[in-house]
Image (cartoon, rainbow, N blue to C red):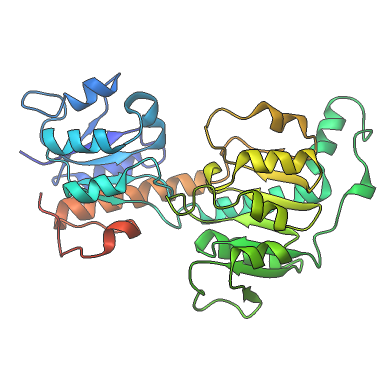
Length: 342
C-alpha cells in the first residue's frame, strides 16, 4: 500500500502536475471532513485518512479544521502517521510549530513563491497612500469627479525615505522596486543582511528605523517576538504625517495604537493588506478616506499561486521519497537529521 498524502485544500493551478508528481509513489487523497472532530477521528483503521503520512495545508482549510494549534497537533500525533505538514504559503503562523517540534512533525512553507506579487502590491499601497489614488478613484466612481481629492495633501515618492522592517525576499524585492524612483532605502532586520546593494542602509534598531522613515513597511513573519512589535512607541517615533504599510501579518502592528495615530493625524494614512482578525476589518478603518485597504490579496496572482502550489507539493514529494523535504521553517531547522521516518 502506497503512503497517502492528504490535501487540506484544493489544488487549483497544477492538477496535471500533481498527478505526475505522485504517480507510483503516493496516493493523493482529498479532505472530506466537515468538522474538526471528524478530521481528527478519521486517521484510524478504516477511516478515510488511514495511512496518511503528510498533509498539504491551504489556509482556507481553517474554515473546516480550524488552526493547527497545539491541541490539534498533539491529537494528530497521537492518532495518525503524519510527520510532515506542507503549508502552501510563506506565512505559517496558523501552525503551532513548537507543538510540531515536540511531536516530531516537520513543517515546510513556500518562501519566495509570492515575493513578486507581494512586493508589487506593497508598491501599489505606498503609491496610493502618498498620492491618494484610491480616494480619487472612489470620488470618480461616486460621480463627484475629483471633489474628494486635494492635491495639496499628496506627495511625490521621489526623494522620500522608505524604512523596511525585515529585509527578507519580499522586503528586498520591494526595496529594489522603490529604489527606482529613487527613494532612500533604510532597513532593520535581526541581523545585517549579506549581499545587499550598497544603497540599502542598515540601521541598528526599530526605533532608529522609525525616526528616519517617511514610509514604514512591514516585512517580518508573525511569531511571539514580533506580535505587537510596532506599537504606540514605534508609531509615535515615526515622523508626523508618515505612512505605514503592512502586507505581512496584522498582529505585528498594535491596531489600537495605529487607529489613534490616524485619528489625531500623526499618521497621514495606512496601506493594509492584512488585519489582526481576518476576515473581520475594524469598521473604524473604513472611516479614513486616505487609507488604502485590500482584503489580503497581495500575494495572489496566477503566477504566484502556481509557483506556491508546485513548491508546497515539491516539499511533500521530497519527504515521501527521502524522508525529508525542503523549505523547512526556521524554527525546526536546528538539529534536524537526514530524514524524518515515514
